[in-house]
Amino acid sequence: MADASAIKEHMDVIGADGVHVGTVDHVDGNRIKLTKADSGEGSHKGHHHYISLGLVADVEGDKVRLSANADVAVTFEEEA
Image 1 (cartoon, rainbow, N blue to C red):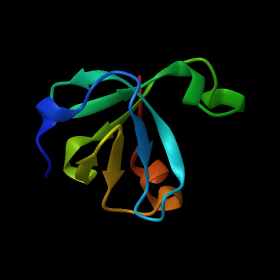
Image 2: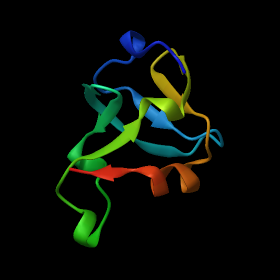
Image 3: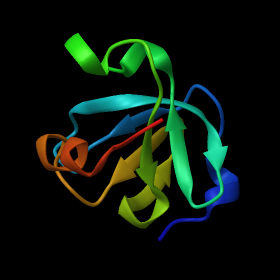
């Protein structure tokens, strides 16, 4: 797991495949809270989602890279 203190607001969260998963709102305990703008559609729209810090492979510049591809990583998201 990467250093959580390196994760900052507005960083892009991308899957191992380089596909955008979300944008960091802030780190909340052992999870990354994503902005509402990346909450998806339908019943997922309009509220925050969380990604476990355990999925973070690296922090590269202004990007948080996950250890899973984007399509897999979103299945691990938790809703607020």
